[in-house]
Length: 294
Image (cartoon, rainbow, N blue to C red; front, top):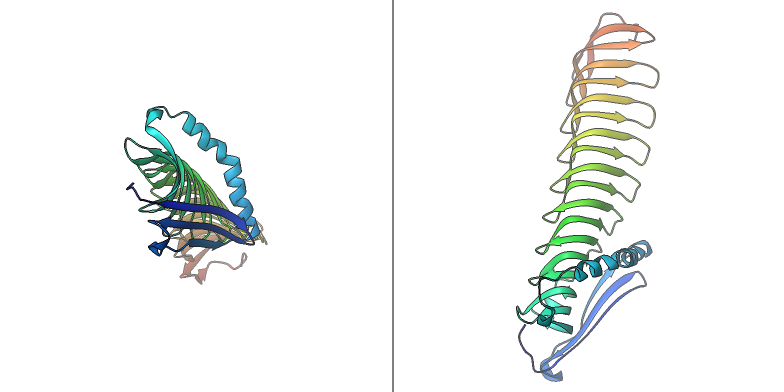
């Protein structure tokens, strides 16, 4: 970090009146340099303001514990710096004078409005930290080489909450996600999308449990509707496809082949102990040997 003849920076992070504000006032080279105060503001509702406080207070000790356990760099190489100008924005925290880098605990306001408080290694977030985005999204958890990676919790400005594994800034591994409307998912993720085995619960009480690929139902799965209907069978790209069994609340059952979400080909229809063979084409009944079960 280069020397400057005069630096005075005041930084404040406040959460009030539905807005989180990070304000910075700096003077570099004297009052005649033309520098103006900079302010970044994000609108947040009361619930999200509370989330920020909870995340920070509940997990603040984790940052301290991680820092206390680090002894691979001699403390004589460290100094604590007040808020100062850096190329990326404004930084306050631990500084390794030998490496001339941010190492240890600190907080930074980037020029693009992102706020980060946590551990640093070689100038970038590395370890445990809290990150707030201009959109209002919040993340607390692990960072590796500047990226969100490991285990953490991510809350969007709309109220969607994810807790689980991350790789390269994306949900990846196992995790749970709860939407503001009450929907809930628990299972596998890959590159930010539902992938592998999982269970999805809808606000109306309907559920899907089975395979996912690229955010869509895929492979074997069971879908239960809130009104009592149920399908158990094969899925392909989000639609019933292959062999499957559909049960209606009135006791009617169809077990047979499906194509792109519709009954297609041969199947067995049953109701009240009576079974009959049927034929479908693109969801349209084309042949039935007897109509006892229709």
